[in-house]
Structures are given as structure tokens and as C-alpha cells.
Image 1 (cartoon, rainbow, N blue to C red):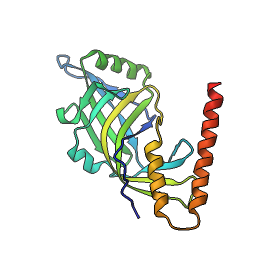
Image 2: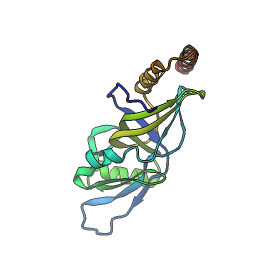
Image 3: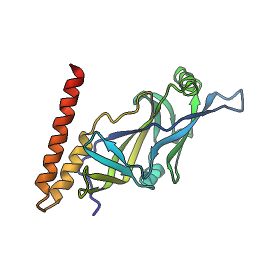
Image 4: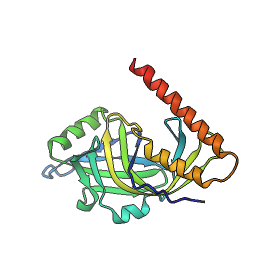
Length: 209
């Protein structure tokens, strides 16, 4: 059964689908172009640091898009706002592929620089910040599969290095889901996670040497 997570902390995920820059037709408009692309993809299983796989269901952001004022920023820096849904400069919509966006870039230093970076291909993808409201874990597979059914969307971010920087919130959600299971596989599942953590830590130690 879908579970309600106990945490209210934000998570971040990233996609590397290509971005496009559409030119502004009116030369007098205070814009430098419209950036378009996808901030999230639906029904695509993504490996999260070797700990679990994750997919987002279509409709996961539907309620959030109706109620939240979502911002577009550069590199997760909320001081570098490039658009927001409440101002009409950022449009978000769900389709069969994922969470599509259109962002009218402002005639500011960040806006102009971003337009050049997208045109040159320097921005590799997008990231998005969210809080999971409804999810489901399948622990019959290895690694476990997390399905995000509903989430609150807070931001989308242009980033040159799409990555999954922090898995701590998802890890706590996974531990909570395991706590709800009352069968003989529980200890074995926790042991596999601990082993993955140790391997990841060993890899990170080797990289820093």
C-alpha cells in the first residue's frame, strides 16, 4: 500500500534531456529568449546511488502545479531567480513524457548568460526540488524500487552538472517503509543497504586519495 512519509525535507533529482532556446519575436520585449525542456521524466527508472531505483508516476505534480508558486533558478541558488509560475514567466505542465517547462528568460545578467550557455550546450540538464507526499516501495526486487505517486514541487534548476547530491531523505523513507514490513526478509534487506553504504563509502575514499 502507498505510504505517507514522516519527513518533510526536500529532495533533489536531475535529468539530462536537452534544453532548447526559442528566440523572442518582439525585439522590444524585455526578454532574451524562452528556454524549454523537461525538468522531470515519468516512468523512467533511475538508479539512486546504488541504494534503490526510483520512478515518478504521471500526475505526481498535478496537485502541486495547481497550488504552488514554483520558481526557476540557476544552480539551486534562490537568489538567482529566472522565472516563477506566479509571475507568469514560468509555465509548467505534465504530459506523457514528464514535467515540461517554458521559461521566459529575463533581460538580466543571469538571463543573458543562461541564454548563451544553453545555446552553446554548456548547461547539461535540469534538476528539481520536491517533497514526496505519497510513495510506494517494492522491496521484492534488488535494489528496492521507489515509486513517487505524489510530490510537492518547489523549484526547477538549470545546472551544468546534473547529479543526485543527497540521498538522506530517501534513505529515511526507505527505512520507514521497511519498518512497516513484518516478515522474515526485513533483516536481509537492511543488511544489503548497509553493504551498499560501505561500498559507496569505500569508493568515495578511494577517489579522494
